[in-house]
Length: 108
Image 1 (cartoon, rainbow, N blue to C red):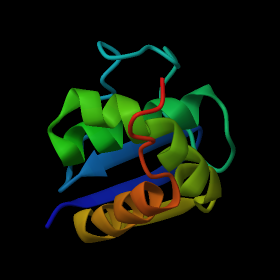
Image 2: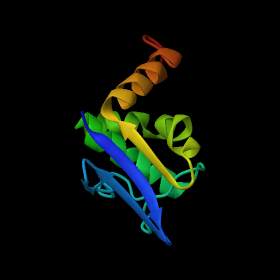
Image 3: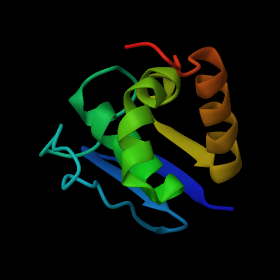
Image 4: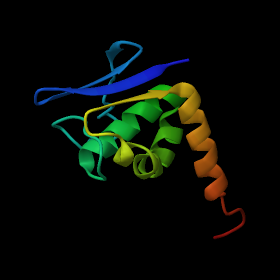
């Protein structure tokens, strides 16, 4: 089980996964060249949501499909100071997102 953690040290925002720095995955989408943020719905939180899902899912397409909804459901609600999120929690959140917004099959 992976452990994602975000904390503030002075003006710095540090995000790790299992103790190592989380790759921002700006190669997928560059929302925030200045880095991660959380606690609201802007570009820094979007970059964080994308990075977490890309690392967790190990599937870029899936990360791109879900990160905006994940941002609003989770990242925008993180505590200002610090947060911890496990891979088990992410799986549950993704399941709830899928259940809330089922794919519309046959719709053109």
